[in-house]
Every structure is written in C-alpha cells, then in structure tokens.
Length: 484
Image (tube, rainbow, N blue to C red):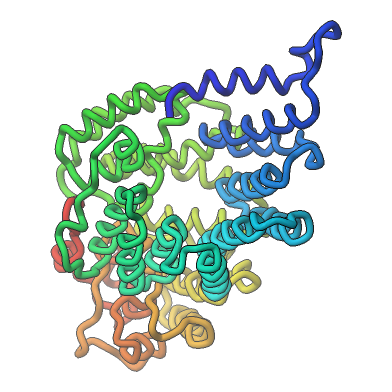
C-alpha cells in the first residue's frame, strides 16, 4: 500500500490548472482525466468518498478511454455506497451498463458487464433486495463462464459467499461457495478473506467440518493488511498484532490504515476481558478522531473507528462515535435512501441490542419500495420496541406476510446475525402457532426471523411468549474458533 500521501500530492499537481503557468504546456484532456481518475481512486483509499466524487465530477467523460470510463462509473458507485446512498450507487451502475452495451464494441464489453453485475449484486444484497441480487450474481457467473471461468471467478465467488452469509443468511450455500472458491483460487489471493468468512460462519452456528479452514494465512504484509484487525480477533497470537502494527506504520497517510478496520461489523462484541493486543493497534488511529463534524468523509471514517472501539470493549466511546457518525450520514444521504438507515439500525443492534423505535419506524415506512425482506425486517425490529402484546403481534404478523411472499423457505434470515450477541432457537416444546414461528419450523432451518430472540441484549419480559432467550447457551454454541 505504501506512500499513498505522495501519490495524492503528485496527482493533485497534475490535475490542478493553477500548477501550470501560461509559459508551460498544460496537460492534454486525456492525461488530466486519467490523473483525476487516479486521484479519485486514491482518495477512496483514504476513506474520503465525497472527495473522490468531486474528483470524478471534474472529469470530462469523453476524455477517457472505454476502460477508464467504466472504471469511473464503478468508482462513483463505490463512493456512493460507502456513504450509504444505495439508489445513487445503483444509478451509477445503470450508466455503466448502458455505456458498456452501447459504447464498447470489443470483447472487453463482457468482462465489464460481468464486473458490473457482481458489484450490483453486492449493493442490492446490502439493502436485502435478495431476489434482484441473486439475478445479478447469476448473470455475472454466466458472463464469467463465457469468459473462461466455468467454475466461477474467484472474487465473484467470494462476494457471492458473503452475500449468502450476510444478506440471505444461507450458511450452507455460503460454505459450498467457499469450497468452490478454494478450487479456483489457485494462488491463494483470497485465502485471508475466505478464512475470515469461515470464522464468521462458525460464529453464526455453522458446523465447519475442517478446522484447517479457520487458519488465516500470514505469508506477507499483504496478508497482514488484508486480514487487519478481524484477523487479530480470529488469531489472538500477539505476534500477529505486532506484525500488523509494523505493517500499518508504513502506510501513509493514516486514513488509509482504516482499511484494517473494515469488516469489523461482522465480529462479535467481546465478552469478559477484552483482547489486550488491540491496545497495540490503537495509537495508529489516534489522530483520526478529530475532524470537521460537517465533513461526510470524516463521518465515514468515524464509523470504522466506532467498530474498533466496540470490539475493543470500550462501549461508551464506541456508542458515542457510532451514534454521531450514523446520524450524520443518514441525514446526508436523505430520507429516500434505505441503506444509510439500515446500516444505522444494524449498528444500533450490534452496540445496544435493539434498534430504536424511531429508526425502525422510518425504515419500515421506506422499505416497502425497496425490498420485501427489508420490510419484514423493519416490522420485526419495530415489534421489539412495542410493550403491548397486540401491537407487537400485529407487527409480527405483517413481518410474516412479507416473509411468506418473498423469502424462500430454503434460506435463512439475516436478522439474527445483526446482533452483538448470538441468538438461540426455540425448543420444539416452546413453539407457538404464530405464523413466523410455523414458517421457521416448516423450513427446518434454525435462523429465521420469528424463531429467534436476541440473547443477552433484551429484557426477557419484552419478548413474545414464543421467544426464549438463553444467553449462556448461545455463548457456548456460537463462539467460533478464534473469536472471543
């Protein structure tokens, strides 16, 4: 990763007209456009998506090559996604696809379409539009097959496995996809991310058959940076933490080091004594908590720091950072963007065990136009904030209707995974005839909306009668290898 700060400065000089006096030759449009595109990418690496968008908007699209233009659209989508703006991210991908179909005549068109489709699947899955996401991933797989990857493209398989685990909750299919990834990822490029996803599956109740799958490789500084802090949590060997600190200390500017904190939202909140190795890492991010509260990029970075404080066991500081950052990003995204609200709700559940009534209601009112599954989820969250039995039951009935209409019985729901504690299913003797619970029983799959309650994060008395909370049992069952 190295000296990205130097790259930023060089690109700014190339792209700024003020840097070129009249006596000098100014860069031709194609050079300036390429430099701005690289600047946008570099700013994205510093978790400055808004600054990245500003650079992209300064580009004349006609000055770019076809490959660069597709790259610009996809970078725009990634920046919008990072700020919780799913509609705008998908709009950028729409423009990318339109250009690929009409503006690219050679064989690279199909590679671009395959990459575009898998990126679309990731963003659709993020707002629980699982049917649309499945179609996008299927289209990408078909295109990659035609391009010489009949068994699957490695990165696409990794992203699809994450989608199955995180958005659909189908741990069995996620494991099957990871098995396919092992076959095609012959050079082990994705071995670190794959191992961490096996840890995630185990944390959420999947019986991983081979313990060697939990091994997070540590072959190079790239492996250390790919694994980041999640790998330290999965493998609490002090030597790994020390090596990660050394690798990160060589990365400049400090904002780029935040890549080591991505995917912490998939890691459990610690129980008991916190992991001391994280104290070695904290000084590397010490200067990043100060910034302009009106700066969207600053809020994006604070979300990552909040997750780090959460897994470090510093609950009050974590909650303070999380609340301020998600509130600001939600306001910036606007009332019509479900992704920012959904991410905020997930964070509230991770940090506090329950999404707020106001946020749950707002997400419910918005999600009907986005995803039936997100509608079911928001009704479920809102039901948990109800103290009266009848309103609670009515909301759960509505959630059940959305589930029955839109969620295949063979898949699991992601709701139970967005909790700081594990959850535990009902015994057969505890089951009622509530529709959500009956659907869970019919599916034969334990992780379904109504058949779960948040273990250890909710007052038992607030749960409906068909819920049963058993925190101790949940901890024993769901603590995956290497996770605390």
